[in-house]
Image (cartoon, rainbow, N blue to C red; front, top):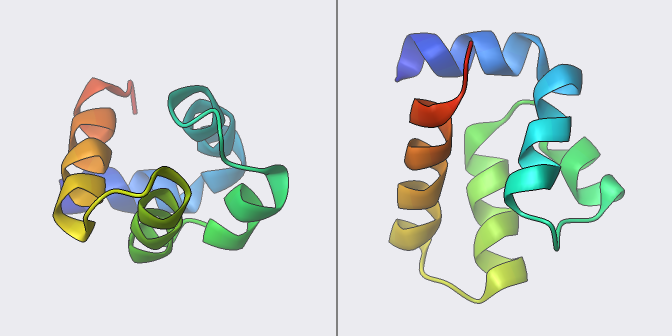
Length: 69
């Protein structure tokens, strides 16, 4: 997943749209704040959805696996 995430991070503006589709409660500012940083995305998803850190990372892993990179 590290290689796939590097591609996502490098093209975050494109994948930010996909992140907003996945986590509809995220604001544009939150998605911009992530700026390709996986840990920042996990932190924001965790806070916005009131889930555990582990669950946030699990959701991100599933999302990355489903993406066409």
